[in-house]
Amino acid sequence: MVFLNAKKYGERIVLKYKNNVSGNWDGISWNKLAEQVKLAAKALIEIGVKEKEKVAIFSQNMHEIITVDLALQNIKATAVPMYATSSVSQIEYIVNDAEIGVLFVGEQYQYDKAVEVLKTSKFLKRIITIDPSVDLRGVDSSISYSNFLLHGEESKSAETELADRQARMDGDDLATLIYTSGTTGEPKGVMLYNHNYVQAMKIHDERLVTVSDKDVSLCFLPLSHVFERAWTYYCLHKGMTIYVNHNPADIQKTLKEVRPTAMCAVPRFWEKVYAGVNDKIDSFSPFLQKLAHRAIAVGKRYNIDYRANNLEAPALLKLQYKFWSATLFKILKKAIGIENGNIFPCAGSQVVDEMNIFLHSVGINLVAGYGLTESTATVSCFNPHNRDYTVQSVGDIMPEVEVKIGENDEILLRGKTITSGYYNKPEANKEAFIDGWFRTGDAGRIDENGRLYITERIKELFKTSNGKYIAPQQIENKLVVDKYIDQVAAIGDQRKFVSALIVPAYDSLKEYATNAKIKFDSLKDLLSNDKIIKFYEGRVKALQTDLAGYEQVKKITLLKAPFTIDSGELTPTLKLKRKVINEHYAKEIEEMYS
Image (cartoon, rainbow, N blue to C red):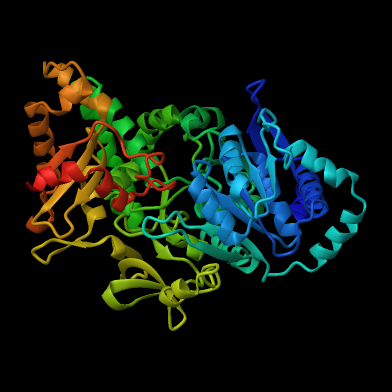
């Protein structure tokens, strides 16, 4: 793909990255990328990487890791991506399971963690550092990325070996081994082959007909996640220009600099956008607020009531929407940096209906979907071409992906994008497949139009002591749309009722308390205030009126610190690790049931 596109596009820019010194976005042409991939491939051969060998990449998003990833495919080796925030024990597990001999790291944080593993590992022999400022601390088996590439420049024998391996590349080469982040149990290495990715490109071409080489994509999610990884491959396949966002915390600034036409993200990102826009509207004068709500109502009628149902909107409604689209909606989107938006794929967890409707109402083409690492990402998604979708669904099932509903309403998958199984996990593979169908662990249904709906995560279901099954994510999604609520963990397994640990949106809460003349000296002081607790209880009650009585949260605890990846309470893809949260907040939970 890279070499063919290099012939097609030549000096056209394919990758852009932030220069740490100048602060500018530097570009890499297709010709340069092809040259770098070939050089890295030769260097890998020269340092002894064999066919089928697993090589790990432990880094935040950097253009070099895209090069290394493609180079590994060229030499018939396998890339094993790791999240940049992984702990020593997580790295050690993957290194031992996949027998990693060579590990690429991004910056000092990753290097220091890798060195800890190097000290005790019987497999890890070499660390290659991408950031030139990394202090190697005198470790003989560590080299910089620039010195690594010199091995390729100086090698004559690697040229012949590379040509031989390239000639023998085929669909059955294991392209990537992606370890699931493990909300329950130990991580499992999902095997994705070249043929899985080739099929993914094919079916996305059929579905995403508005995407072309004129698009500009912002690479924001970790490339260690299948969503961003598969999307980046697709961007390369289509000939797009890709801006690589290095630091996730810079995303708001980066969006305004890049103003992309496409970017994949998890719902958590859009929840922040949704909350921010609503805060902005709340700051308007009463007259402007009324105007904004009227505009959003017009957008809802046009985009949700008509276009989403493939219906022709009345002429007057079209004119009204055109006006608001060119004025208020354009201003809102420009403030975020997405006024050039074509499509914004979104998956990873359920998209809250209220937020989904709002974003589409103001003209943000959020392409909600559903997928897994095991399905090479997309199983279903909204149709971005005719915008014929149902907001409550996760879209139409992708072409050539077979989906059926099994026992307990479990979603089962079959097709060319589905993994053949987990690496070194025969028992897990027995459990994962039934009569050739992959078991997703998600419950759902398919409507008469072939649209898929997710109803619950089977593994996350818990049962109250009264025998009622509860889907916690459904409850959490009801609450997290509130501007004063940042995170929620529903509790209730083998308990008499459902309770919740709530992480407040601290800034909004402090502003509310100040306006309400509630005095406080500290955050702890504020969260223990009876007026604040009653305030939250009232908001929670109002948000869950359409839930069954046994599903409704009866008691809450406000937390003074958010759930984080570093604390082990979130996976790298921001999913709740419920077991860890239950352990960390055992005392607070017990108090709610005392």
